[in-house]
Length: 107
Image (cartoon, rainbow, N blue to C red):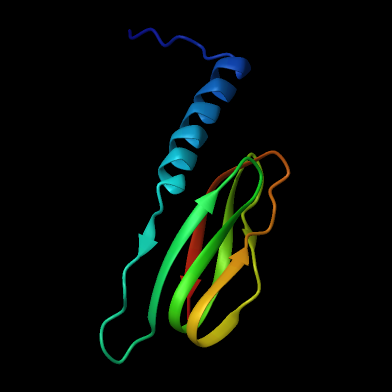
């Protein structure tokens, strides 16, 4: 019979913190959402993540919102906004404890 070691709450929390730090470090390098094909929205976006907050910046035209992926709590959604050109930065709703990543949703 296989033996499974029990993971303490502290070990599990440390694993989640490490995973969140890796995701956050990756996001700080400037992840981007590729441009859409012809006939669709033409937005190019980059994101940045801090400890409990972050932002997304999109260039082009389309309708989009920011999504905060929070550790240890529900994800949080920003409001939808439409832009017809140029570059717009929107701040992600803050997480209470830790932000794992920021995503951009497009309509």
